[in-house]
Image (cartoon, rainbow, N blue to C red; front, side):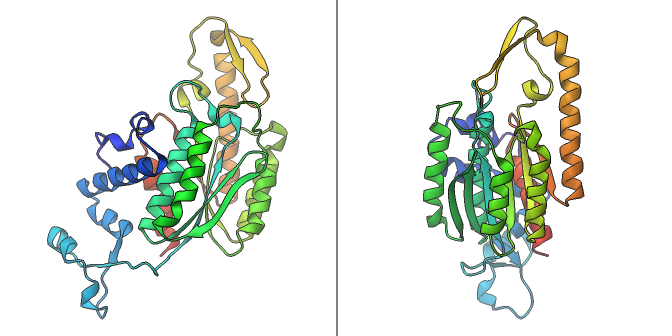
Length: 309
């Protein structure tokens, strides 16, 4: 949909930019630019900062510049028109710091979290942020003004800069149960994670998601993986040391000898996640962290449209 030549949608390019607030703004601007260049121009206008004009509304609300470009009437949205309460929840555990070289899942997730918040408030939705590993490390209630995003962006900066491994283990289930109570009124929860929790805790995570659904929260999960290594298991065929970033445990393997068995285990793992999310009516988007931010932002907008109909 978007113009793939737009550099602000490329993860590696984005990682070389300035602070999170700059990254978030440029990702969103690149995304909206791509939408405007696409045959889905009306889609971008409707979601970015306008809504279709209805007869009887004040003429002063019409954006005549948009009318000149599209021949269609759209009215501007105003600050008080908050449509959704959105909570972005980012897993900052050490498994998210993989891969060590290049952009990590945590970096990708942090920039995505910033961009989603920026896009939300641009649409006059209220956006909040929660960071967690074994416990909630940061939490802010949803706000609908861009000026209120700075503290969240500063926290995301700290997370990306952290290099102290083996100190941030995951306890997703406990955290999600807590958030189900803290979020209070019905909201739109966006969880950004790699699902790499203790294997014994996998079912507990789905029970926690069920708790969120029971509290009437809508859920969209961005499931992050580095597809090349974590799914396809592409490593040189020589003895390779693999290290668990949460425990520090090391294992020496011959990639070629275990690749098929590994891939089968990963496919089984992903199939279970897909099945359980489908059972719970939880939207799941699988994201390769080497790909453009376009798809994840598009999937967010599609979900948002369903919620505001």
